[in-house]
Image 1 (cartoon, rainbow, N blue to C red):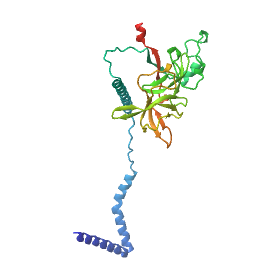
Image 2 (cartoon, rainbow, N blue to C red):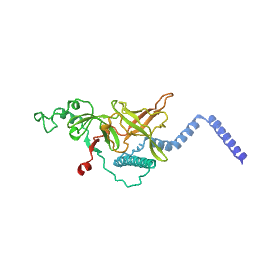
Image 3 (tube, one colour):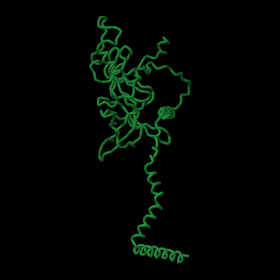
Image 4 (cartoon, one colour):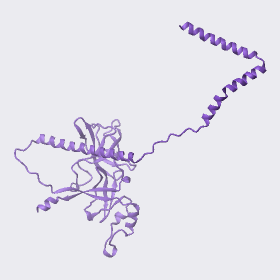
Amino acid sequence: MKRESRSAEIKLVLLAVTIGVGLYFVPQEYSRRLSNLVRDAVRPGLSLVQTLKKRDVPEVKTNVPDGRVEQLERELAAVEEENRRLALERLRLAEELAQLRRTGAPDYDTHKSDRLLVPDLIEANVLGEASIALLKEGRLLNQGGAQGVFESSFVLQSDLPVIDQGTAQGVKAGYSLYAGQAVIGKISEVGKWTSTLIPITSVNYRGSARIARKTEQGLQLGTDGILVGRGEGKCELLQIPPTESIQVGQEVYTGEVDRELPLSMQSTLGQPMYYGRVIEAELPRGAPYWKIVVEPAVRLSEVRQVSVLRQIINPRRLLAN
């Protein structure tokens, strides 16, 4: 079968060579006629090719993102935040169980008492440049200089972001600010009606923080370190020893105690709050600590409303008196 196929190929090649030699010796008049005949035979095909080339190829329209995409993105963000909340709740319950196992349950019944000081969140709006300009001109307050009403010059002259809550609402310097469960910054200067805040990306920001690792037993928090702002939209986590296992993508939460505040001003919601994710992690040879870069979960430029965490006397204790 292979020999027959090869013989046929050889015959075709010989036939083509013979035709070529024959055409070479054909008189010019006949060769011209033959050339015209071939050209006329292929003209319809050439015309069809030229028509197809000139025809506009329809452009493939890309799908324009619609409201459905934005809705799905919002739903995904909400689900991720809920997952973090559930993970932290599981961590809290696991810590309570571990403590109960260490100390043992009492043989007698105990009654849970109300704490004297409890955390309290108040909403605050981040003021825009136009509002701050009006405030500096004294046109936002419903009372003026004639009534002895003035705002703090420290607040008005600052270049830091401003919120519309101050000492009249029990706000103090150092109090934390949140957007949902994400840490936004701290209160810097406090006036009677307004306060300035230091974003977590500011070089002046410092706060206690720790890495959260996902294990088979659930979320585990590592050693406390110090989160500082880098001034470039990023943060850096300092003083994490090399014994800690650090990987890119791990989440960073607030620490147990904020070393930058005196104990008298410590206030906590009873659970860690979210800073962001690790985007760079390096342990230089011989270095005493990790070099960790953190990307904040929320940027202040994306937020118009925040929550200020303050400490108040438990209303239940007041009612009991």
